[in-house]
Image 1: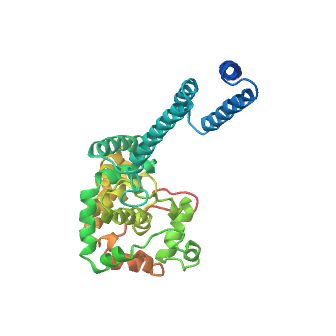
Image 2 (image 1 turned 60 degrees about the horizontal axis):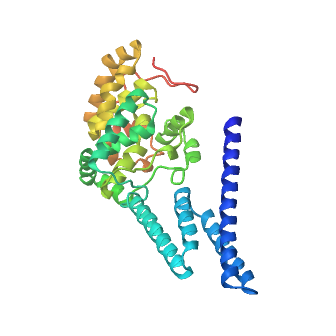
Length: 350
């Protein structure tokens, strides 16, 4: 690192000396021209004009990036050899062309962002395919990559999201949710208040789930790759209700619990991301959990998803004070036949 730093300092010194020599050469040339053309009192004015032009160019150089700086520096020194009027017109036209090129590039880049809604990233079908394949592989390697899970869900989910939207529009409570567009964040949900609710209420159980796993409702990522503005909230609502589904099903966020929840969500929503996780997630289970998954939780998750109410049609924010057993009964949600044991320090299965 020290050798590299010394080498860079040496290069800077060499470049500085070269620039000083070039500037002095041009000053001497301009000085000689001034003596030939303007003898007497005009000599001083010639040097002042050259110095002012050089200072102006140096000010411009500092505001440009490296590529523009190199190009404009060459144009500046060539312009000093031409007639003043023509040289400055040429320099101005070249600078304007470079600025127009930069502006058009910035406009092209900006058109890819925030086109349909804040945070939207416009992508082609080919780009979505690359994102889906890459994020799918990344999720299999590391299921904790929530950014890859979100990218996979958004790039593969439009058809399933339309199906989910139709189910919400067909239900009075679902339509109300689409109209109100409630968000589950710390700005809209008083998490501290949920902690004061009586034990056994849905809000209190959700508070336990957040506290025990050190989760935060604000951690859910925004939507970026959905190109239909009407489907953006459907995806966001599903994403923000994921922890509520865990709470209702009594599934902790360990591997077995996530696989069971993904089977439930895959059947209810049809999202390809959920189907992929439900099919390939069990490969990461240990021998004991894999046996329990096959004998108990797979059948239960599928049966419960088919019989219960579509959970995106549940206005959860109105049920914080409801007893969780009563809420499950209202939703026709079958509890796990062998509940996963949840301790205050960690989560494990019986």
